[in-house]
Length: 221
Image (cartoon, rainbow, N blue to C red; front, side, top):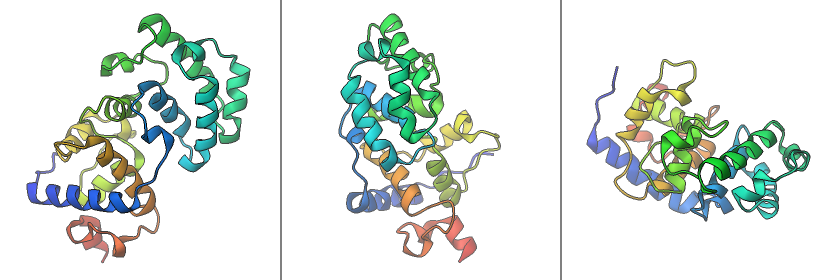
């Protein structure tokens, strides 16, 4: 069942989130670029990995493999060595395969269409939207554990899928609460807000700038 949109609450949410992000947003090198390749690499390295831990691996990865063409020729053993400190070494093989796909099928350039991004090995709805938003500035939601939790708590928007990150219906509902401009910073703000304030356990509800319009806050406090 779709949750009715309340424009006043949406506007309040967007405004307060932006104000919070301006003072508290985190800074990472992949946020200072619109290069779709660098953003795609960062998203792979950030999978199930703390952003601060992924930072060193990202810097070395981009230094060693600055383009899809260089990645396509990479030695998988070296890729595994790069990724080893942050775990999930299977990402090495996926990244090399993606490098080869981009070179062979997309003339060495990361595609800018969702259906083409989804053809890349290991790329799903979340990652395709991340590239579309952060590289190409498309107004699409980021279906991340943090963002999904925020929308559930604030607006009561939930998914009945076992894997909400793949739920197209949830994506549509979240899209209705996106701003008309500044989509990159807004989605980064959501990710940071979920990591620092609206956390899974012991969320900082009393210091949350959105609490007066949050359904979760009203129910708990």
